[in-house]
Image (cartoon, rainbow, N blue to C red; front, side, top):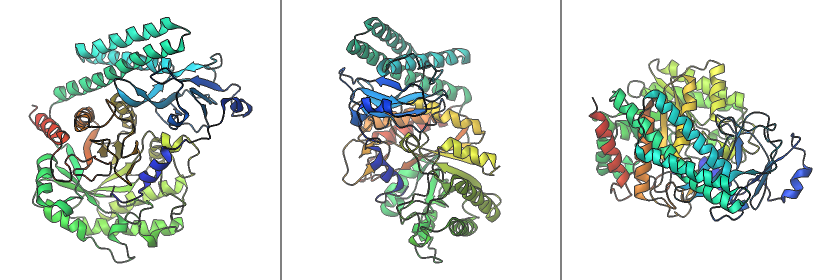
Amino acid sequence: MENKKWTRRQILGSFAVLPLTANAAISSVSKVVLGSSKLTRCKLLNSKGEPYKVKKMDRFHICDLISRPFQIDPQFAPGEIVFAPVTTPFRISLPIEVPGFGEVFCYADNRGKGYTAEALEKINNLFLNYEFAADRIATVHRIMEECRQSGINLSSAALNRVTAAEKFLAKSDEAQADDKTVSKWAMESLCESLWAGEMIVVEMAKQAIERRGARSGFLFGCNGFRYSKYGKPYADYFESLFNFATLPFYQGGIEPVKGQPDYSRVDKLLVWLQNTQIKYKGHPLVWLNVGTFQTPEWAKNKPFEETKESCLKFVRNSVLKYRSRIHVWDIINEAHVQPETGLGMAGFTKEQNVELTCASAKTAREADPTCFRIVNNTGTWSDYYMGRKPAVWQENVYEYLQMIEDVKCDYEAIGLQYYHSGRDLLEFERDVERFARFKKPIHITELQIPSSSAEIPGAEWWGGGVGGSRFPWHGTEFTETIQADWVESVYTMLYSKPYIDAITWWDLADPAFVPHGGLINANMKPKESYFRLKSLLDKWKSIT
C-alpha cells in the first residue's frame, strides 16, 4: 500500500485501539438475552496476578476452529469477561502479555475440540490463564505427533521447552483454588509452550526445505515504489536481494482526472527493471479504498454499475497497454472489506463485491489471455472487523474466497497479506494452512514487521497501535534483531510450503507502510534483517 495519510488500515487501526463495547458492569449482562440459556463467564489475570484491565480486552473475540470470528457482544469488567456462547465449536482469544515471550494473541479451544454452549453449561467461571496454557501445550503435543509420523526430528532445545511447559502446568493444577498461584504457573507454562511451538514450526520447515531442495522459480519480491526517490543505491540493494517487483497501478494515482491516465511512474520503474532479471507484477487494478491516491475523487460514491464500469475500463486499458511487458496482476485488492462508506465511498453488497471480482478477472483475461491473475486479500484473522457488527459488505477472507469459488470465478492464485498482528509463528502457520484447502497457488503479497517501537507522529499501524508499538514479538519492544529473527523464521516457514510460490516484503526502505518496517533505513543503510534475509536466500539457492 502507498504511504498516504489515513489509508484504510490506518482508519481501522484507530478503531482497533479503542474498546469495542461499553465497559458495562458484569452484573448488567445477565439481564441481556443473547441467544443462550447460560452466559459464559471468564476470568483473566495479568502476569502479576491482578485483574486484567478492561482497556486491554478490546480485541477479545471468539472464532471457529479455522479462525472465522463469530459476531458477539461481550461485556467486560476488571478481570472478567461475559458473553453468549454459540453452539458451533469455537475458540476464545485475545492478546495478553506473556512475560518471557511477548504480547501475543492466546487461544483457548477445549484441547482442540472447541468450546460449545453445551460444553460450558456446567462451568461457572472459565479461568482463561489456565485454559490458554493447557490448550497451547495440547496443540504442541499434536504437532509433535505429526512430526513423529513424518519423520521430523525435533531438537533437544524444543523438547526441553515442552517438558518445562508440562511441569509448570502440573504446578498450576496443584495450586487448585489459589487463583494467583494457578495463574503464575499457567503463565510460566504458556511462555514455554509458545516458544516450543514456534521452535517446532521452524524446525519442521527447515527439514522440509532440506528434503525438497531448492525451489526453482520461487519469487522473492518487494514493491519497487521507492526507486523513484532513491535511485541507484536503492536499486542495488533491491537487485541483490529480490527477483520480483510490485509496480503501482493505483487508479487514483494514474487517473486523477477522468479519461486522462498517466502511467509515467510505472514506465520509469520499467526502464530500471527491463535490464535486470527481475520479474514484475501490477498492483492493484481494482481497489476501492477511500484514499484519493487509490480511488480518484471522480470515481467515489457512485452506484455499483457505474463503479463496475469504470473499474473494468481501467483493468482493460491497463492490461492492454502492458500486455507485452507485464503478465502478473493483482486484479483486485481487499474486496472482502471494501468499499468503506461514510468516507466518500458507496457501500456494496458481498455479492456485488464478488461480481466485481469475477468481472475484473474476466476482463483481464480478455485483454491478455496469457496473464496470471491474483485475488489479493488482507486481515486473514479478521477479528478487528468481523468480531463486532461488521458492515454489510464485510466478510472474512475465507468466506469471500468460498463465494468466488462457488460462482466458479476463474483466476490463478490467492494473495494473502501478513503484517505482524500479534500472532506467534504457530498461529501464523495454522492460518496459512487453512487456505491450502482452495487448491490454488498462494502468493504472500505483503509482509512486514517493524524494527523499532519508537512512535512516528501521525503514523498508525492497523496490526498493533501507534507506530506498531503494540504486540511486541519476543520481548517488550521491537528491535532490529527482533525484526531479523521474525524475517528469518517467517520466510523459512513460508518457503517450506509447497503451495506458496511467492513472498513479497512490502517496503525495502523506510519510511515504510508499517513504521520502521523497511529492511534498510531512510539513509540507505541496511538493517540486520536485510543481511539475515540475504544470507537465508543465498543458502537456499545452494541446496541441491
